[in-house]
Image (cartoon, rainbow, N blue to C red; front, side, top):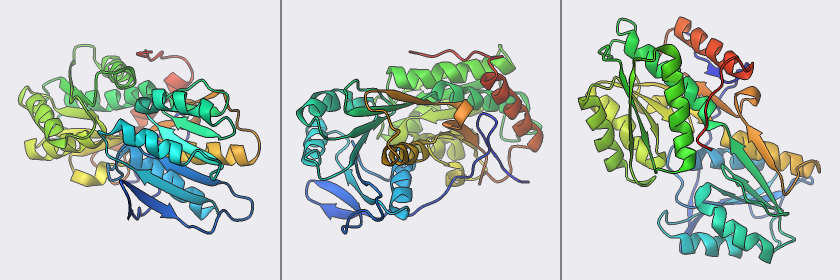
Length: 348
């Protein structure tokens, strides 16, 4: 069966790229060449507020960086300790002196740091993804994760009410979602997910819990396991690196999970129904390309949703466990959102 990626009305394929890392002082740097940008391409540095290897959010940003390098840009990923905001700030300031055409940061954890740093370096161009910083030299990218999570909710609901089609489901009419932290961006996933479940069957119960961070995969495993023990047939992880434990719990419990941010379907094949993508790498490359063309507007925010494939749901590499008729039904729900027939609530 051919697996598809469902966004608005667009179909896209996810690329798999290799991430290479080397040591670099207190932080870890992933360098993409030291000879400078080629043929007028921009030089771009990505300051990560944590390590690569989360198989999700940060890795997808790094894939976008790798695509920029393939297009001729000089790139560098600077990693850090996920629990060290002082290091994030130091890394950001170290690359803000004008050596790079664009400095990229991401997530709500960087808002205050960038908001304080950007005015100190008014000639430096910054790009922040998944959050907004209102400074004249910052371009912001946000995603309608509530819309992508809506599709994940539709998928989870279909699994728990169709146990003949999904043999690991019990028909309990219970599903769950494990978030990283109880913050607006994560709650935007939660409300969208709940709306998707409700749109299929309002009687389905949705269990919700939060890890408390985005790195503790053992805690993610424990929380998902508790949900499976309560009868959840599917758990959606929106917890970054901590969510890897949720996916492991699905296999351990003999149930289903839904991945996030990158294609996590192959990690526990047969147990991961699909992955809700915030196409971060694609959006970063698009923004940098726009800057190279002189069309990126700093001081403004660009929004990505189902309508422009900024978020999507992929079934690629999931072992063909979601039948085509279910995929087609989810695509129909997606179109209803894009057309305005279904309004997905937001936590903002």
